[in-house]
Image 1 (cartoon, rainbow, N blue to C red):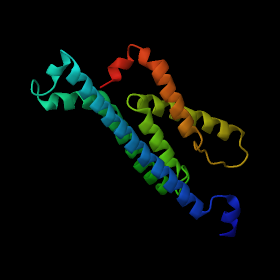
Image 2 (image 1 turned 180 degrees about the vertical axis):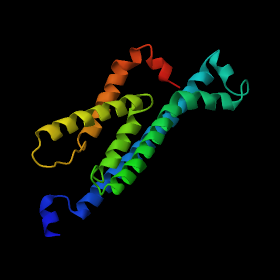
Image 3 (image 1 turned 90 degrees about the vertical axis):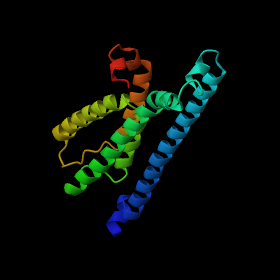
Image 4 (image 1 turned 45 degrees about the vertical axis):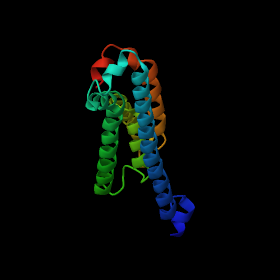
Length: 184
């Protein structure tokens, strides 16, 4: 107990950090889906005021057309990335427990989860490849030059890689012709 007080990784501090980042994950999901609902409302308003676009809404069309449209345009990419994030969190926890907490700190699950979620689909695919490449490079560096058996942690790389992925997706990947094939 005394040694953990000096190490900065006491169980109380770990639980508080993990709870804090879990709340950030939940807040991010609520915020993004709230924003998507707002975008859907704006889309409905724009269509209802257009001369031709009003025919896409009821009574001219079934409401299911509008729901399908906003579902595929706005919600589907984030639903897929949320699914990938939740799968990552559960798999990482299970894998980490199996190997005696060797790979992840408790709050890292939530770092990875929120990063995967915010990258959105198809950015999630690029993010996963990017973070795996970082892990391989770091493991080669740590394995090559480390004299003691250090734990390889991507602790600080999760959010940095997510920001990089979001930026590279917005400013470069979206312009590539094959990127459109990945869209829903």
